[in-house]
Image (tube, helix red, strand yellow):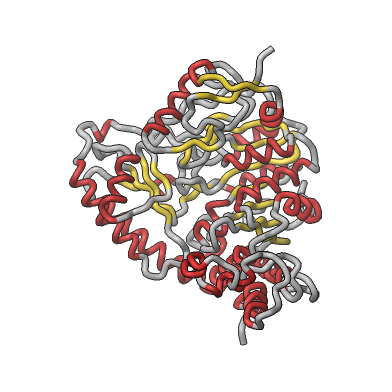
Length: 492
């Protein structure tokens, strides 16, 4: 007999609807494929189009109680240990927006980890909340931001007595994980809920060798980017509500916030992929993660044997802001090579069509999915790195090199919402120094804002962003993506 978690109620309901060839007197206009462009049909197949149905379809998300969609979300909550789970079709970014709007029901002050994703800042703009930014631990050797320490969170909450929540990030883009259990205890001691942007940790719930996942550690609301590693379709994600507790957020409040931030025409294929990814994680996640972690560990060993290369791994654990390390990230330290990360990324594409998740000046990051059964990409990456390292050679002063950290964050002169919606003007970038930014400037990768709406711009920060652009990066949030001009708050 199948266990409950082996079921995929939403995916099955879509399949049944498609198989019975219904009269589709509803959107979308491709009518299940027969009205679709031949090129699209050839690319993705008629079956995918046949399962692209609108919301409020009888037997799929309405008409029975509980309907297949509600059942799919119930099973997701059970799999992750949540009191309730919501399927999201606008990515984990929607989860952050919904989290901000949920917190805004409780008040207007919140403590936020400063190296939060840009969508968290978007949530502050939409909600109007007044943030107190808490600085993450900065790695003295590597020059990268890790997670918040419990001491930093405690001090920030003590300095913000009106705060109605604490909002942190774990794991980071580079794999550092916070002591989330301790952070939850700190937040609850101040009578506020802990919101965790666990976008990079949807897989953590399914293997005991991984860092503890936020819900099991006592977090109250958790953003989960299910597509990143668990393997649902791009743009799909989940939002998980923890068990009722101190300062917790009501399910009805979260539900309203999710509805406000979602499309009224959600893509059924995204929902179906979440249902299927949940089944795979719940039923086969441990064995799949075992295989992937073993393969990635072997790749780490092979990469460290290449002259000029090292990796970030669980040796980071114990440093400030790093309680544990997520091994599903393969971060390569290339300070020892005579080439930067942007150029190395170009070389890897040229050598064997290797496409990375992140590349910066001194590090590149490869991400492996939970369900990769053969993992031929790991071997390809190692071999391509060997070829690239031999081609470019080592740096003559490798032993004395260190990561150059981004410049310090600017002074907070007004709230993100006040700056974003207030009177503003566009000025040449060299005349923006000292002005208050009216837009986010977040270098991609990894998408952490270097400048927030409401912060003062510095010459160092603008130079850092320009340097990133010149090396092949991009900047999110800027009205001028080449950064010749910057949108700032109008003076006078």
